[in-house]
Length: 338
Image (cartoon, rainbow, N blue to C red; front, side):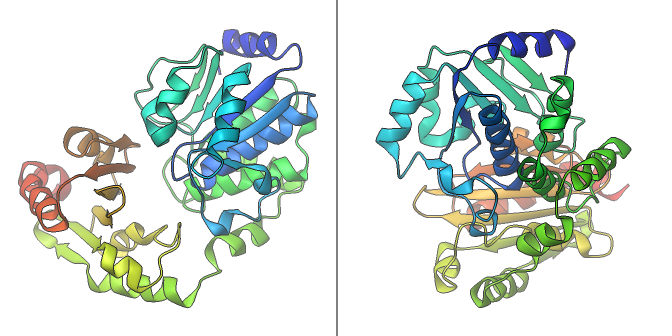
């Protein structure tokens, strides 16, 4: 974080403030971990803080310290709007465009309070007075860790903050295997463990607790897998009917897209998931090597993210979307096969 931004944030927080902390829609481990860590920190510093999530988040994250205090904008709409309208500073974490918060977008756009952005995705929009944006970082949680150090408050990282930050770093690095995992990331993790993060327990809560329905849904997803060897590409589809058949719960498809990348020679893996309520297909893109799924998602599927992990959407049917997807691959054949 640039030193001038550190000074600006210190000035902003020099007196007790009423702060709102916002993750993106469908928040994942990094979004929940970073917002909860910041919430604990601001509360310890004497500020009044509240996390307002655009919608619900997965059950496997609800064990996290402070998770029961998170307001759900969809469910607690009136209370959430009142808090936002009275907030004196708005923190947005793990996203860099106000369009990422769904129905909250027009509410946030209408606020006059200063915004603080903390995010590690590419191509940020310039809506924040204080903008800590670094796409080289493994996760927003790693950035929050570094921010606390730069604010001179590393000694305030207690076990609750450490567990929240560890969770976000672990999930956004694929348990420390993605290329954005650096020696600095591992040094942060070591310090967080020294401060009370329980790595083994966190891994078990996130990855080793399944329901029978989720495993059956995974089996369905793998049966639907299409392998396009000519392009070193694979994709999975899940229809709304299939999700309903296995009593889909938020977060159940987390990690499914990565199974394609375990196949020998595959460099590009995608999952298309139907959401009838929103009238869209939600798409997750993953790659290995130097094929940028961020560029692919931004160019063709109204999305974006990181070079090796991105998201997108389509308003066409599964059949139409996958046909369009396959039609795009020939122009990327050299990148996918060289």
